Image (cartoon, rainbow, N blue to C red):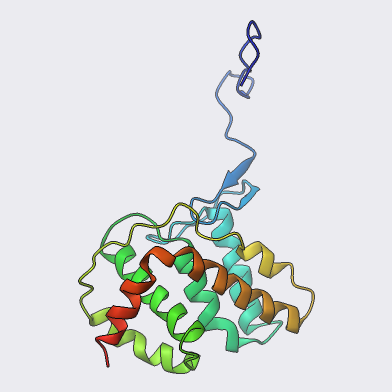
Length: 185
């Protein structure tokens, strides 16, 4: 807020007096602020292009340099749950099944391979609850925190912390996810 009598701050413009894009981008899902680079986004995952790029780097680490596919299920479920996108069939399905994955791995201690095999069943199953309105905050841990890990052990711990943080943020809908999965039994 500017002080009384102070001139308004002029937005940055180029030589032709066209408004310049901000130098940073804020992810609509996790709130991560990164230098603006542009690039691709996902059709229904609600992430900035810059955050989506960071997620691609993380997936490369899962299978590449760190060779930690054990954490892949948590990485995918956590990122998707933290970046729910906008209401629509595909986003609704994505949020539901990825929250289900977090619940099964974190609370039921399910094997990630079992969860992976269960997903086709979950994507075919009708979700009677429809769109789950995302909570105001989707966690305080982001993909960038995981990328900052310095070793295998720290990477694994950060993925798990990230997953628990995002699952906790969805607390208003946890009972819905639990009940939906209990119908599967």
